[in-house]
Length: 93
View 1 (cartoon, rainbow, N blue to C red):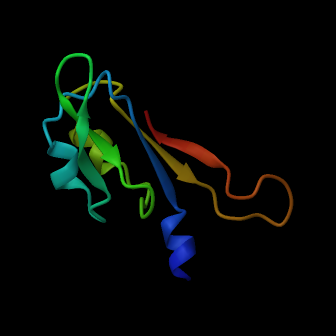
View 2 (view 1 turned 90 degrees about the horizontal axis):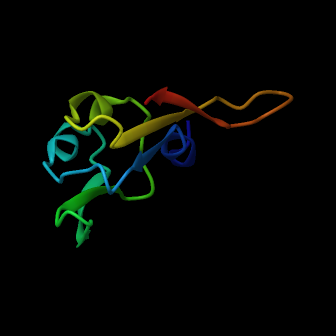
View 3 (view 1 turned 90 degrees about the vertical axis):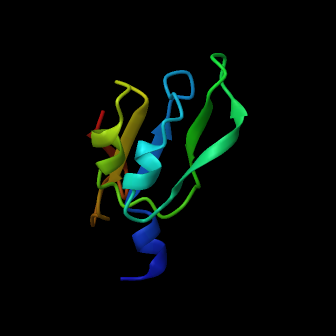
């Protein structure tokens, strides 16, 4: 398996209006692809964000997050011979 295929196994989305910047997802992320951002949301919290590559789609960040709806993890499907290749499917929401 190539490095590109490993990078494309998952996709992480953080709702910045729900995130309170507690950092639990940052500590729990096995590939360490979540960072605390510099921008603040409307409540004055520095929020977590995905670095853009390396998510495995494991969903650990979703499981440890105390804010419902703050993190969505999409797991990419393996390539198929015909049809949708690599389309994201929701792993945890």
